[in-house]
Length: 159
Image 1 (cartoon, helix red, strand yellow):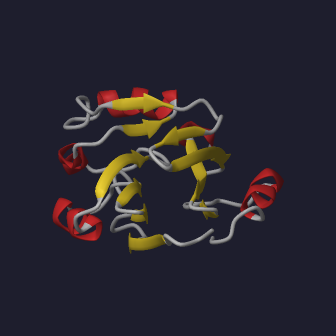
Image 2: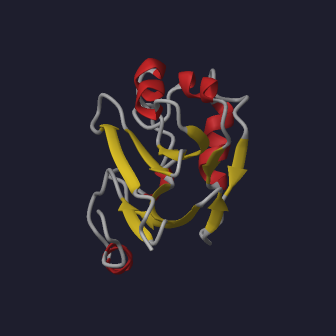
Image 3: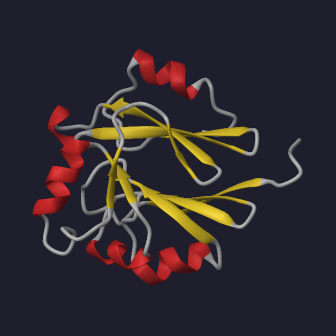
């Protein structure tokens, strides 16, 4: 059942930049794109990039160089409005999620809202990503962990 592994590669996490590659059978998604382009491309290393999932649009999670990744960017409507106003990001190919699971190639992304320090205005999300019979929960910049997030995180094989 798990003949083809799901690989999770964290390329960077912190105020200097965030990006994580989730790959399966030669295909990948990138969660956040807040690192230099060279580093993100090296982390993808020949994988077919299906999409970039954006947790929120702070500069350490989404840099203007990300538009050169040649993939659609999945985010909520609030982040899409913010991104459209940011220099260098207005021309991204944006696809909206509304809180329900969505499919990107072999990956299913289920977004869940998260509190970001500073208030709800940041439209911050985590993702439960399912692929290859495994589930990865990704959450970042948490002010605290609400009960609904604990329930979602408990569904994951990898956190």
